[in-house]
Image (cartoon, rainbow, N blue to C red; front, top):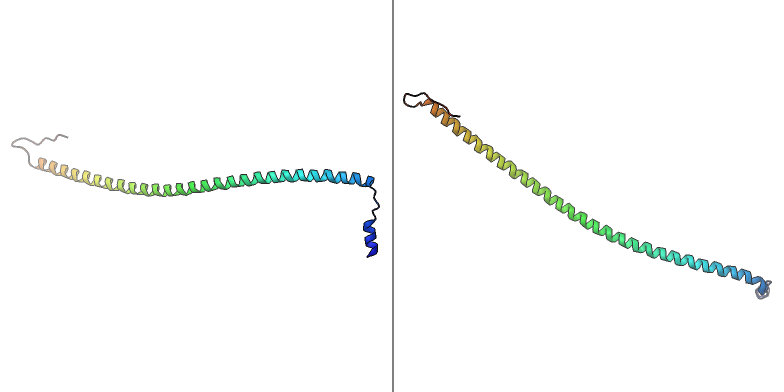
Length: 124
């Protein structure tokens, strides 16, 4: 144990030999501190950008949900309007058919019963 202690106490380097090494270490330390500050700044920027991206993604997701809901509602309205148009068209065709039948019946009556002594004339 005495030998180890003695080696620690006795330094073969002189102060003039330590100066360039300490100066180099000091330069490296300052470079590492500068790099560390740059990395910390980049990290802060990345975190800010991430938070902004998350916020934007949340807004877009909410907008998408709303748009899907509106699309479903509009699709239901479209189906309802389609059914209404079909119903109205069927009613219209039924009315036209009944009017056509009435006109045919009226024409048949006018052809089968001519006026007194005159032949039946048709006005179309």
